[in-house]
Amino acid sequence: MQSFLMQYEIPSDILVLYEDVTSRENRRNGSTESPSTLDLNMLMIDSNGRSFEQPFDHEILGSYDIIGMSVMSPQAPDAYLLIELINRINSLITTVIGGSHPRYYLDQVTSLSPTFAFDFVVPQDGWAPMLQNTLPNKVRTYPYH
Image 1: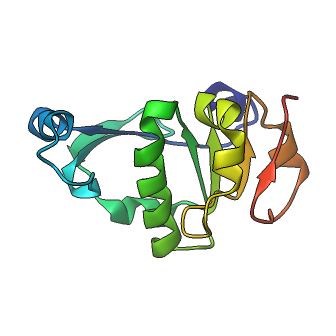
Image 2 (image 1 turned 90 degrees about the vertical axis):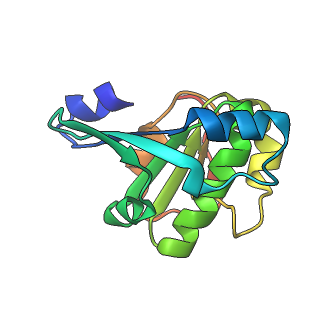
């Protein structure tokens, strides 16, 4: 996706969220009741190639018009936690989920409650449908293009 956007001179940033070692271990051994965005760190790589790393600051999400997530199934609970946060911060942010999770669990992803709903569901590689549409209706799915 990043290389496609660069090809059309569309600036984009990459945000990598990850748990610190202690939080990850607590989650694995079950001593943490539920995941929290407070346990996340972030690595931000901006469109100019600059990067910085710090504890996750959810305010950064509010500065984007479109947020896309590539999600594998083990990451789905975290993606749902993030989409809930994004929808709470600014429901006008266009959200996209792609990757193997929506590919194999399409029915689950498209039937999420409005709290967790994505604007676009791309179950395989394919960004052309997004470029062909203006404002999305919750929830649209697009096949491979």
